[in-house]
Amino acid sequence: MGRLYIETVQNSGGEGGEGRVRKIFKCKWCKVEFASYYDILSKDFQGRFGRAYLFRNVVNISLGPSEERLLVSGWHTVCDIYCTSCQQILGWKYEKAYEESQKYKEGMYILEKERMLKEGW
Image (cartoon, rainbow, N blue to C red; front, side):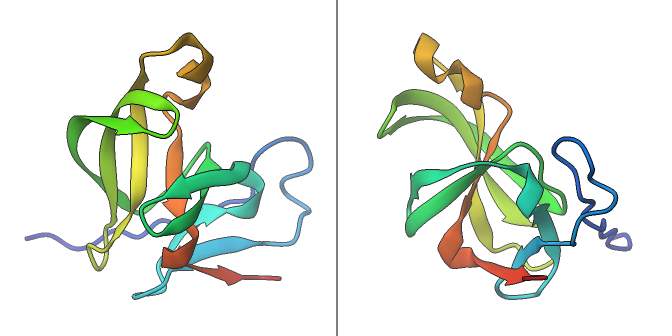
């Protein structure tokens, strides 16, 4: 087994990323960083444990196997995402959307609000 590499979340998502206040989300259990507030695409999603956010970019995660799931918005191929440090499930990644109106989700990540801590606000 190798050494665990933990990445630092960068402010991103549009212009002016360098001068912004560092607002990040961390794993509720081990406090490892995994997403920036500025990478949220939508706060209007439903996860397994309640409300969830759609992100364009996340770090310090590992992916589970791909599987077909019937979600609120239709059939998708998704894979669960886990914290690389403590292996808690955090949400899922959209691999493929079968309905044309849902294609924008491909390659994006759902993170469960219940499983995150906020830092920097």
